[in-house]
Amino acid sequence: MSRAIGVMLLVVAASVLGACNPYLTAQSAAPPGRVARLDPVDGFWSIKSYKVELSVGVALAVTCAEGGPCHDLTVVSDDPAIATVRPASLGTLQPSGIASQATASAVVIVGKAPGTTRLRLRSREGTRDIRVTIVAPPAVRPVLIGAKDPA
Image (cartoon, rainbow, N blue to C red; front, side, top):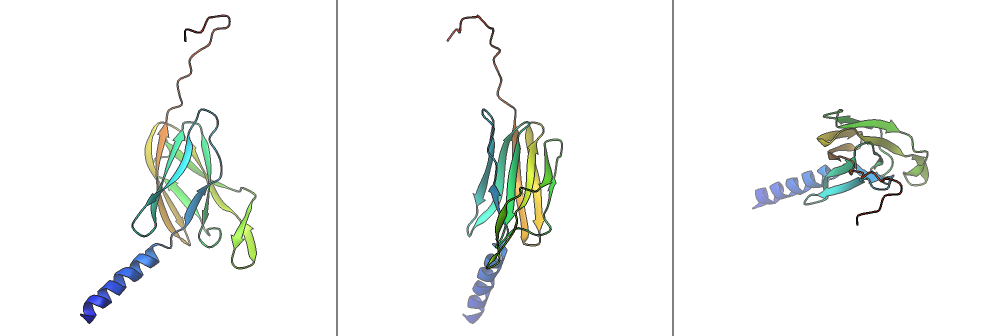
C-alpha cells in the first residue's frame, strides 16, 4: 500500500513540476480581413501547447512569461519558408518578482506561405511547442469604377 502511495506522489510531483512552462500572450491584432490568433491547447493539468493561425504576410507579436518575462528566449521554426520568427522589443514593462518590472520578452511570428509547421520555444523557464497554420489571404474581387454591383 505504501509503495502505491509513493508512486502516486511521484506522478503528482512530476505533473506539477512539468506544468511550470512559460505562458504566451498575443500582443497584436490582425489587420482587417486577415487572421492572427494565438490559442492555448489545454492538457489535463494546464496548457499543453499553443496553436497559431496567421494569414500570409501578417505578423503576430507574442510575449513569454512565467512569474516575470522569460530569460534566454529562443524560438526556432521547423519550416522558415512557412513561418519565421524574429526577436522583438515591445517597449513595455511586465511585473518581475515582488516589486520590480522588466522589459517584456517577446517574439514576432510572420506568416510567409500557406501551410503548417511547428515552432519550438525554449527559455530558462521551460519549453513550449507552437503549432502554426498559415492561411492564404482572402481573394479580392476587382471593382470596376462605374460598373453596377451584381449583388
